[in-house]
Length: 188
Image 1 (cartoon, rainbow, N blue to C red):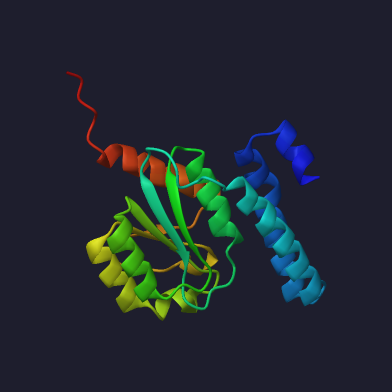
Image 2: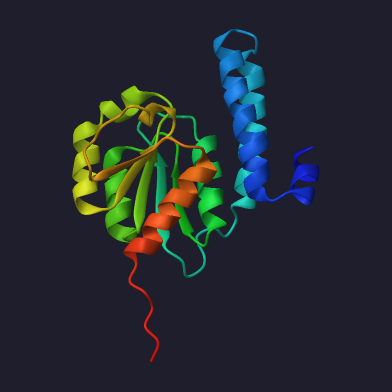
């Protein structure tokens, strides 16, 4: 079904209208006990594999670089992968660190890669609020955004961009900010 949808619609449309709503519904059904852990894991693994298949080569190119990671303890990565795919569709290069990434590792990778934007995602707000000091330190060195359901209502000050919209809308926002901040190319 997913392959058929992608054959007929843009990746943004499939992500925004099918994948993200499906994941939200799946999570809600799991919380209500209507879906077993095995079913949730199977569906997530299937989608993860398919989405990461689409992500091959997403670090190549000449566009701005985004470093993406899930906060420590955070296993829910599919929204972040969808966000990375949406960014890639807007010309970004992606360095993806994945789930449950210690803040120290995110900081080390950011120092090494020098990304235009670091994005840390979490479904559970505790993963972000518990790392407040590490996030603020990271924001003092690199442009930082936090996203995922755990970022809703979070206030880390004006140096940290909070992404509360869909992965597609968040990619549009990050891209528009990057374009405004990047100096215009000069013609000789």
